[in-house]
Amino acid sequence: MRTKIVAGNWKMNLDVRASQTLAQEISEKIEKLETPNTRIIIAPTFTNLYPVYHHTRLDNRVEIAAQNMHQAKSGAFTGEISAEMLQSIGIKTVILGHSERRQYFNETDTALAEKMLTVLNNNMEAIFCFGEVLEERKAEKHFEVVKGQLSNALFHLSANDFKSIILAYEPVWAIGTGETATPEQAQEIHAFVRKVLADKYGKVVADQVSILYGGSVKASNAKEIFSQPDVDGGLIGGAALIADDFVKIIEGIL
Ligand code: PGA
Image (tube, rainbow, N blue to C red; front, side, top):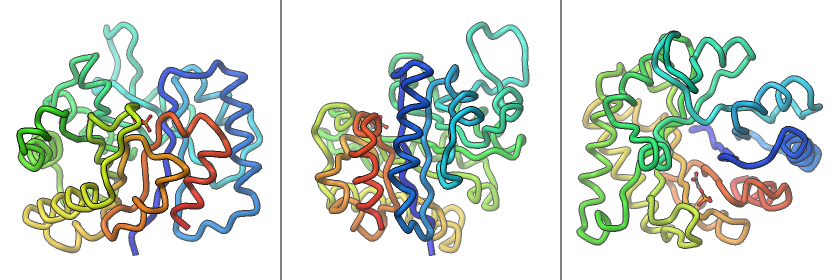
């Protein structure tokens, strides 16, 4: 059975105290929830990773992830963070390839391919994001775009490496816009991604990888999206900043 995952991407929001408060609220609210086969991940910004992870009393089901990471081991890369730095504070999961990184910080498939190797060489895990922009969807190029993003950034990896990869389909037109892909649109792409993986790595690998949907998931639509057979959870932006909403989204997958 594939692992179900609800991950909150806090983006560039919340100062240290607000991050700790939100993490603790989420933790307290899930205390009474049974969450079999389900991972709950939150991704605060870099400066808040350590205090949230080490100085906040959290239910041990709440996992902490980073939002980005540089591919190099160390060196003259002003403003960047390495795998070793994340590892040194106990962080093992990192979001990579988020569309905001691609769009505003020129993150390329080539850089992502290198980042993936760094993740794997450091025994870390990636939540790898991909998805088409509106013009590509309108031109019906979304399948081609998604396949290209996956093959460019991931297909140099081995089948075994996919044990350390969570995929997140995030159509850019649905991120932060209030517009969500319909459950059918999400399912269609998720099934396609699984087929692309099966063609390259075999059905066993394709069937074991968790594929999350991201893009305006809310308490009101989570359950319907998560009910699709190939949707294994969500990567949540805005709604992850409100404890009640995030917990309702988690309930949507149980
Ligand atoms: P959103 O963001 O839920 O605010 O649309 C999703 C994401 O960027 O991961």
